[in-house]
View (spheres, helix red, strand yellow):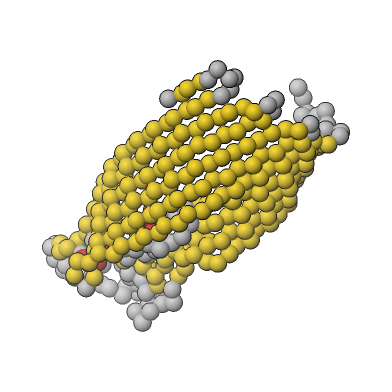
Length: 292
């Protein structure tokens, strides 16, 4: 829906999106284990069959309003909701040694449901004063991830809930100054978020490989990124020079962590939030127009 007003460039837009998808996956695993000398440890290789079925639904609701102010000013405001629903089931069976009989493998059976919601309000204002331009923005966000895993532990059907809920403010500032001689400086700060993938939050223990287990983390927080950048541009008739000095600090860094092998030599890998990561650097880009 798009509504235009009498004032030029004043506009109200509304968008609603819906999508649904299903997936079916069938896999077989034929596993042989050998020692360091290359000799087979298990003379009868294990055979597993795994069937995955999934149903995923997405809703997107967005409302945006734009209001021009003065000669170069503009205000933007809006609301957005993103809701993702997932339901993924896994069934598995394994063949009995020296037979063609398959039996249910409770270690690999699970039912994982997730509901991921992000609701946000934003306000943005930009303007130009002679050679100085600026843009100020703020987004307020309410996010929630609810998960539920049903599976077997010691052949007993159990359930495991995960709940993550946080409210955050994401400011952004962009400052631009035009200089003499076709030069320009830009300084910016933004706060951003990197959310974990749904599978990273599934606590189900994947034991498809006999010595390398994998599991998700239902309490995994999103990465919180603070980014600063100072840019400089210089323009000649056929040459353009662009440079930027940047600094990024990421909190709650998502990293896959491997455990110490247990008494059976099994290593378990799970995503964890590490404390902090800092990146900084300098970029230099030159462009030359050789011919028209």
